Image (cartoon, rainbow, N blue to C red; front, side, top):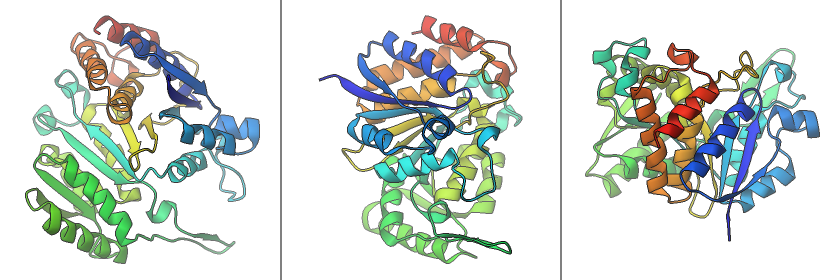
Length: 343
C-alpha cells in the first residue's frame, strides 16, 4: 500500500514552494500517494473555515502531513468572530495530538556571513528547540469585551512531563528548560515537573533552568552553549523565530510537529506565507526542502533519503547558492535546480 501524504500548500508562497518539494522528493526515490487540501486562508475563502472536518479526517488517515504556509493581510482582523488562517494550525495540532514541535537550528559554514551576528558567535551552533505545542496561552480560555480581554495560560503535570521527556531523549549533553518561574505559577509547575523527571529517569543528562528573558539574550550572545531547549508554547514560538537569526534567514528553518506513536506528524517550514513576494518566483524553498527531510526521518523512517536532501542543500549553499533573503538573487527555480544537481 502506497504511503499517503496530505499536502497543505496554504497561502502566499505556499504553493510555490510545495511544487518543487515534490520534485525533490521524487528525485530521492520516494513514491508517495499525494492528496492536496485547501488550508488556512485558502480554506476560509473556499469553505468559510481554516480547517474543514474533511481535511482533518484526511490528515488523521494519512502517514504524514506536509504543510507550506498560512496567513496574509487579506484575512487579518481583530474581530474575534471572523475566522483566521492561524486557527487552522491550532486546530490541526490539537486534532492530531501533536504536542511536540522540533525546530533544529544549525547554521551552515557557508552562511556564517549571512547572519547579522559575528561568525565567531554562531560558529559551532547545533541546537534543537523542543516547543510544547498544544497547551499554554494559545489554547487557554479567551474572553473579550469592549473594555478588556484575557487569555488563560494553563498546563497540567502530564503535559509538562511528556514534552520534557521528548527533550531529554533528544539531548546529547544538556537540556536547557526555559520558563518564567520568578513570575508565573505555570512556570513553577513546569520547573518542578522537569526537575522531578530529570532525577527519576534522565540524571545522566545535564539540566539547567533558564528564565526566558535570559534565554533570549543567551541565544544571541552564546548560542553554541545550547544543546536542547525545551519550553512552553508561546516562549518556544518566540525563541525559535529568534534563533532564525543564527542561520541567516528564517527561510532556512524547518520544523516537525509530532505526537504519540501512530499519529501522523505535520512538517512545515517555520517561515510565514510572505505575501509581499508571492507569485514572483523568488521564494526560498530550502526550509520546505528541509521540512520534507524531517518528514522522511521522523515521520516515515527514511533516514538515507532525509540525509540525501540535507546534504544536497548543504552542498548547494557551499557552491554559492543564495536566494534573495540570503543576500543573493537566485529564484525559486534556480534554488531547486541547485539542490537537485547536488543529490
